[in-house]
Image (cartoon, rainbow, N blue to C red; front, top):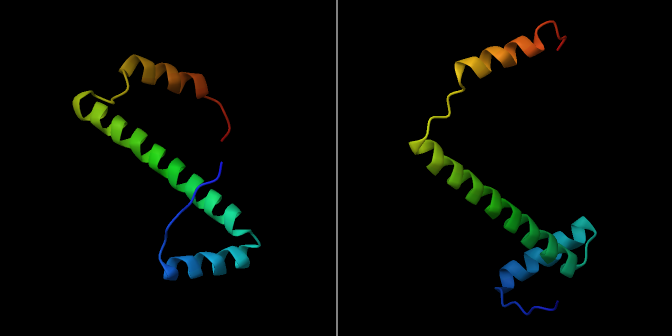
Length: 78
């Protein structure tokens, strides 16, 4: 997919220089940067969603489950 971007001269120069330093084409550089941004944004949204859930729901582990988990690793070497 081809996309046209308008960015400042300063950012453009910095991106070109960094892409060269990284041994990437400018297309590869921008694709990598956008991918990293999208992944980070998705992770942030997941974290925000979980924070909203745990703001109203307890995240405490049920005592029975905690005992069963502890018993299941007894004697294990770490």
